[in-house]
Length: 624
Image 1 (cartoon, helix red, strand yellow):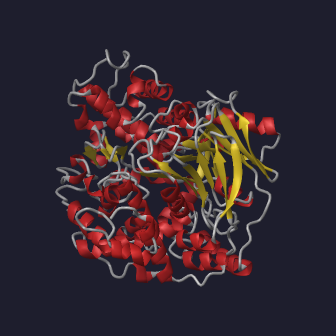
Image 2 (cartoon, one colour):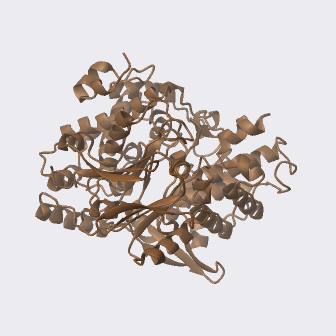
């Protein structure tokens, strides 16, 4: 077995209560690396077709990356995988913190959870033993309460814990899985609902071993150089992350037109200032509160943090950019206290801030246009900028009370229930609310929203977006070649293709994507030093293609037509005002060119069978 791995995963059958280890072959690791790559390979082969996402047959995987558990900088991410109950597609969501690092140090390269427990349970991995324990006393508790109870109950506050809150328990299709008092969240794809459907309340882990690597001295040299590069960097985004986190970019994103305003109806700082005359930068308001910087395992950047003040009445997780955009500009809300409170509610109850804020903005636009009234909203005046109404409706959402129950499964499902013209105000792709980055600013964003197997995700095609905005995602110029014009679709698709493969390998290795912004990140060299493999650029590209193709195959097997994912008109048509005024991007052509570059049918998105043979996965596919 190659170094960098434990060589085994944990299989947890909730129906029978049986917990056992399973050893994997080295070829499986080399072909799929770890994390999302290993996750999709295992689920594709082991899960029945057309499984009910909230049923017994949906497998839920917790997959740390290859480099997790080592001292490689930024290798903290763990990917949670399952069929998404929100979109019906391949579902994955990534979280940072320490849980992935801890799971690798506990001796496992992943956990697969099968079946449904007869009663609420939690999984404890502690002192060389993995066991299911009763969680009846935890059911109904929020995520912070759950962590506190388990720390006291087990008597070890060094345990790393992930859990769902009441939103996951009630199977809200936009529910999240939370770690470390809300400082980390696997928010997308509705995987909190899968965990809730299985009556799995939490996983608590304490690792006691060091993950072996092939060349520890080599890793240390690479590590020291990279940390020095981060310390001395002149890259603005990295320095912003180091000081104030992602929230520090909010005003810049609004100004450049990345941030949607008023449920994607307005673009740019001029539009926001006109619609909300009291506007001042959200990050300026947040700076008034005492902040404490925190970091994920092995991270030299440290973009996380907490806020504290007498006005807040305690310590809260500092909102990230997506959360600020969600409950701020999207709802025309300039009350920063309400944004902090909304973030805390979402963390405690376990619900995705992107989808939750989008659902409320959708409801406000429905209210504005007479589609719903106070008779529908339990008397709440859902008007733009009404911070008390936003918090009141969010509180109903996470509890599934009244009209909040309508919104608790996201805007698309809510529109189906409301009827009338409600669908006009939904901004989603494939049923999932899109991240808050306008695709007309960078075409890679829109291409990722409609081409990645997890639709509407702002964290896909991120390496391509970095290149498109003038950065270099790694020290490998062979990946991208020369700069390209906005409408040079064929050339762009080749870049998107190469960088998507690179990104899939990095994600499967457990690397935080913010690391990409520090352009000297040596992914290939770290993997080679950890495993002892003669890992090359060519092998990385083939491996990344294999992983991305498996994710696409999962969707096709579930009966989905990839080319049916479409951008809403608000996002695809040229804007009439603002930074993107009159900009037109042919996303249909970009999709076709990307499919072609990936070796997929450019019209359907189906992988070409001859290429499946070359990737060594043709025998897994059971369609003719």
